[in-house]
Length: 326
Image (cartoon, rainbow, N blue to C red; front, top):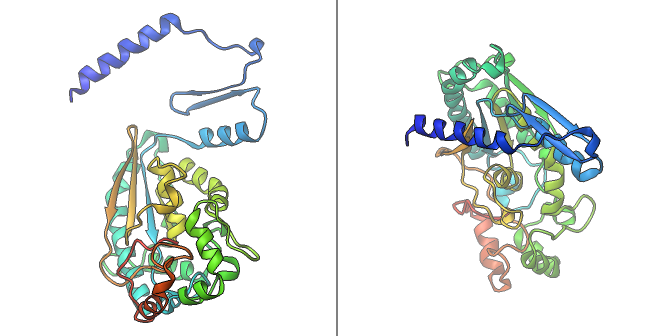
């Protein structure tokens, strides 16, 4: 399209708006939040209550400075290999190989975006180190160490180039009493729970201490979203399937009803910010294996006639179905 014509049209529309615009004043006692120059100036008045506070927090974080967010799916764990749900298992050899290749992919893309950040006036000639966010479980620590030490040319990445943060809010959705069970054990011991989750995957909460629903997950992801929005530098998030879906839903503009069923591909989702919004690129990781276990009540295991079939598949390490729904 013609950029000059688009700019001229926009300027003309602004002039038309100016003829009818009525500025707000404090005397009107109206609740409002005003952003000036895409967040360069932030004004709020009569903002009260929980919802308005949340809106103010988010709008105060959003900016249009160029940067890139990489969301990487964690590698295969020993529990994946055994077909067990959740837990704090270590990565398998295939998971480590996947993590190394994912680190190569991200490091390569990081080098391509350095010029964009350096040239950004919003960064005031200061490029922030890449923010790396992970959960607190062992597999995330291993993935982070691979990212820190693995560079495309075989050298070590300088630690000061990355700022690492471990946050419990980025842990996978907790399965409560079902954590550590195989799909066969789930269907035998908790058939009603599996049916309940299959009927309402969004609102269903796993039983037992710490058990969560996708609604609970969304609530704890609020702070993560604000951190990613307000960051002036690049960001990397390493997470499991459920957290991956929550971030996808936010940045891709999906509804909360769609969230539990979003397709998660192995590899890295790259989100590049510009004044037009986020552009999305899927970066494939073809070496090793990512996490793949399915949760209770998914389509893959809801048919009880398939008990033994699912059990056999889990022990054959069948991880080709990368859209398994946790």
